Length: 132
Image (cartoon, rainbow, N blue to C red):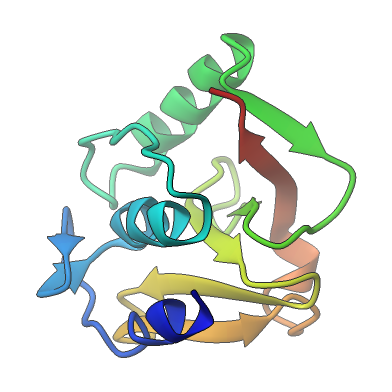
């Protein structure tokens, strides 16, 4: 599984991307979640740059109990970030309790980062797992 996760590293960012030719942050999470859990999670089908709509969809699914909030990072859980001052605007998936995989236009594609990285650790909104 880790080999398959590492194969995602370097895939370029593409807004709305859902395959290995290009991914946005949610497209990368969909692929990685399937690799780690062999489960399909829903696609928001929202432009990654529409932060307010992404945030709204996350809140709706939380209200519907589709996601369980965790106390801290776990292997394979989703990590949500508040990079925008008002909205949860970025998402990744934890590889383990210390590192996460994500895809960003700013960094040019899929990469692995540390959760305690000075840019990300203060912006963590929460950790979640799909309940369905």
